[in-house]
Amino acid sequence: MGIGLLGLLATTALVTYSAVTTDRFAADLAITRWLQQVQVNDTAVQILSYVLFEGLVVVLAASAILWLWFKGHRVDAFVVVLAMAPNGFVFLLRDFYGRPRPSDELVHVLGSPVGMSFPSGHAVVILFFVGFLLYILTRYRQSKRLVYTAVALWLLYIPFAGLLVVYHGRHWSSDVFGGFLYSGLFFILYIKLFHIARAWESRHPELLGRISLRRTGQAILRRLKIA
Image (cartoon, rainbow, N blue to C red):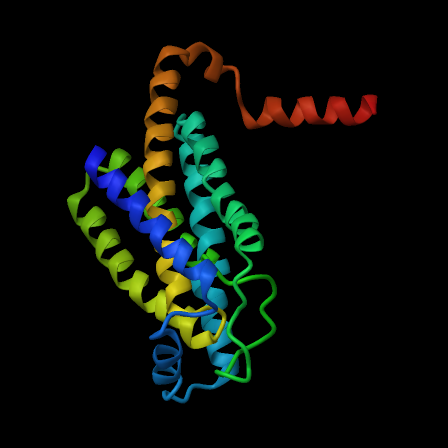
């Protein structure tokens, strides 16, 4: 694990340095133009992008949080909420690195994406967030058929959604690759956090028993009345 982590850190640092010092890698433009040879209705692509990213993530996140909460794994539900933070952190990284997005002069850009380009936040959603939810599924579900099916769908989702981001003209392929590298770092961090949270939960069951949606709602209402 130590050597693998060092390798991941070194690769991430190298790709980040290369991305910061150049607007795009040598193959980026060719890959986007090759993908965009396939003619697809722009509206259909935008709808598909919304379904695969915003729509899918909201459904998966809400389902995971509610399922964990009502199954009594409330600390794990909070960990899932915290797992949304890396996507916001990526926005800060992008502003810091300042790599420009693809432009209409070079490729076809759908919509009006804002902000900088490296690393891709969509790639973090694809690999880290969905992968982390899948990891939690393997911890609590014993059905091998369900787990294998979910893993297979995720493995199909990764390349398809990653290429869709490039086809969309939102990011260069190196932005997506960089997002995958950062996802690996986030994944290692959150797996560690997940196990720390589970250990804490097992040591403090009496504290978690006092937490409920009803009591939380009542506390919020009382605070609102005081305010």
